[in-house]
Amino acid sequence: ITKETDVVVVGGGGAGLAAAVSAAENGAKVILIEKSPSLGGNTIRSGGEFNSYDPVRQPKIEMTKALIDELNEILNYNEAEFGDYAETLKTLKAQIKEYLSNGDTTKLFDSPELHAIHTYIGGKRTDLDGKEISGKFELVNTLTQNSYGTIEWLEGHGAEFQDGIGTVLGALWPRTHHNVEPLGTGYINAMKKSATDLGAEIMMNTKATKLIVEDGKIAGVTAEQADGTPVTLKASKGVVMATGGFGANSEMVVKYNNYWPDMNKNIKTTNTSNATGDGITMGEEVGANLWGMGFIQLMPSGQPGTGALSGGVWGSAETQIFVNKEGKRYVNEYAERDVLAAAALEQTDETFFIISDMTSLGNPDLNGKSVWGDNYQDLIKNKNIYMADTLEDLAKQMGVPADTFVAEMEKYNTYVEKQFDPEFGKKNFGAKLETAPFFATPRTPSVHHTMGGLEINEKAQVLDTAGNPIDGLFAAGEVAGGLHAGNRLGGNAITDIFTFGRIAGASAAGK
Ligand code: ADP
Image (cartoon, rainbow, N blue to C red; front, side, top):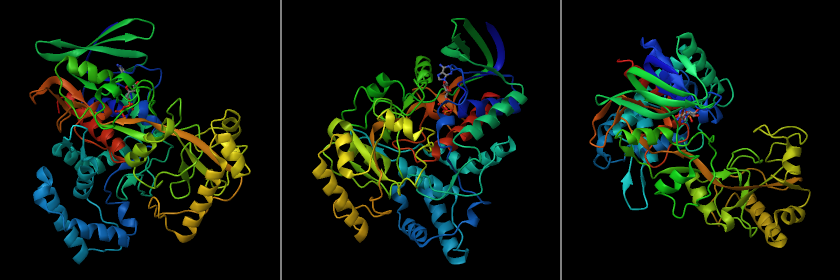
């Protein structure tokens, strides 16, 4: 098969579909190719959380004293320590002063500048060689200045957002939006419909293998269909790489990891098996610079053997405890993801159990399904989870010493009573764990998001190792590097893929 078009988009997740819609509405003829039999990639499996300031929804949310305290703390930050972000901090401080003296301090404060400072601080990390990294200012600034415009753009294409605003784990501020439809389905359905309506052609089961270079310009891709049919797609205006991350490519994960000491070669992932870093490999072959590849985000609580988020039961962080194979607690269960993952990796077999009871699970119907869609009875039968009426029996099923485990549970319940955890400093508690039946879900960290990738600029052009744009090559979403640096804030990935997907499509169309 040989075809000619203006723009080829590689990958049919959130970033690719947004790029296809955007290129098409900017007048380009578009072909999108997707290697799997379905659209959506990791985007459709994600929680769909979208961080943005919001002049419509946020003023309906109450400001709390804790958040006012945080704003006051920012007033003490020193511009001299903020590098490229100094001007942003200065603007933010002026906004905060104005808000505290003349604004309505009962209403939630937010701004693109606050989101930028959070993203900068949240992403600043040091790798195993001692090198510090933080998000490229022009990318972070582009993200936070355009996030609300992206919400309006998505709404214009049929995606519906809930009215409520939350704070997804690790988002650092109440600016997380959710679609009306569950997980990432709302975005994907809306984008797919718009792409098709705008005349973009979508080719499924078609895997890009190589970029075509002509006269120093990216001129298309070669691909292969699942049945072996070779495909050549010529693109007169450019190619948008939107192939997602490399979380499912354990060879690449182990090769590039420069954050986790002793990363296990057999580490699993929460990602689809299609997240194999194809776009990074294809980009590197044409001279693209790889940025921040060593930083890999682990989800502390993957299913042993599969890495999946599903296949277990638990409540929220306040209500549950984690114990190791020795039957002991080892961490503040309310901590951030990278802290929880690091602690889990130090336990025997890198494994722990999430302990919950009927109260912490919200008294579910045990003949029904969990929030992940698993049948409780199947989980029990398949030993994905253990259930028992006594803690002694639960310990026996888990294979941990019963006396230690029972004593640990009793001790934790006294911490709940006193609202004080002298061992691990947990500060937020739910009810005591004392309502049978009790549950244990075995878990181990798994790869969740790869922050590094093809270096892009604010127009989503891919840069070469000398820092110059590669003519005709664009990238957006998890395949791109430069934005999230060492740690991605919860809720920033969906904002990223749609904001930069939209930019990449427009850039490729020549806007
Ligand atoms: P993002 O969040 O950045 O959009 P996703 O994981 O949601 O990333 O989507 C990436 C999509 O790209 C997946 O559907 C995946 O199957 C697809 N993909 C990955 N590699 C290729 C390739 N070589 N050719 C075509 N599609 C690919």
